[in-house]
Length: 461
Ligand SMILES: *Cc1c(COP(=O)(O)O)cnc(C)c1O
Image (tube, rainbow, N blue to C red; front, side, top):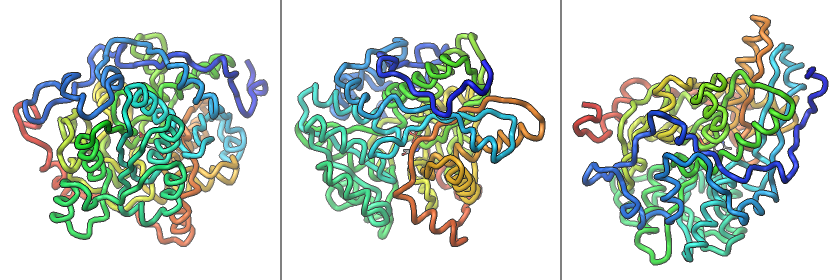
């Protein structure tokens, strides 16, 4: 099919939306390592996880063998309010770059949370409600996950308690108010409302917090409050599973027009959007049915994949969560201020970590100023004001398209545009005023983080 016949936007019909999520773990020969109980160093069982997570979500978390899992009708009905999301051919960007490459992006910013996070929030809220819970607790960094979960909880009439990284709580009052509009309570973290929060505050007075701290607080509240469970917006297997809706829709849309991507790019914080986008394509690669290049893009200030260690580590700063085997900078690593708040996590999904370790996926880290240059270039021709997180993927998509210009190759590039940046205008302002910093941790900074990784036989020793 010639280029001309491909529309700017490929929309799917409602009935073309997936009825099942795809679980890429089922097709991995070597599975991601299981979560470990930090006390016994034995794999976490369903029973071990029950005080923390909702029952059905634990089943999904531990299921490494079922390739397709039904999306309940209630969740599909909610998805219909903002999905299918468009797959856009970036004709205008291609023209501006004067590249022979064909660029596509899957846009997940068409909902109030401004990101892909609603895809998993609604699933997690549904299972919490189905179990008869009163409410859920969670952390949020930049605020997109907290917003998505607030929306999902208000829809199912669940209480929602959000621990928000203090620096974001103060810098992004509007995000906070969106969450409160949906009925959530929002507490700046670390706080005096939990034991772990008090401990962190005593050890680091004046800290502006981190995702790792906020997770510890939210878990403590969930496990100490009757009828509550903790939910997480990224990193976990279940979240990647829910986010596979992104990749499945993309694949259906591309197949309709006979488009085969050569390179698939996504930003990686905890790995959920990237994992969701690449899942069906990775499944084909794992089965030898097709080949693709996958590139994870992370901030140079928080380089889990490109400079981290592949080891068992705590998912949170307070060390109350299970151990996960992943590329990590150490649970005590607090990344320098970076405007891509959603990418400031010390670890990475175990699924993506394992795929990366097996050489099935590449990773690249990019500096903040270069990311905002790409964001602005994209905004000026494609009309969408991208989130700083998403702009990491834009940066590498542009770099790859420019490489095609040099070599004359007509590659097809697909990237995930995870969200919009309306709440990130302070970051854009800094960029415009030339006040943006490009802090990159040195080896000594990283060593301090690595020193905190738990040492036991088989782990880093
Ligand atoms: C949270 C977020 C990310 C990063 O999270 P992942 O789990 O790695 O996908 C990326 N983009 C946006 C807009 C986000 O809100």
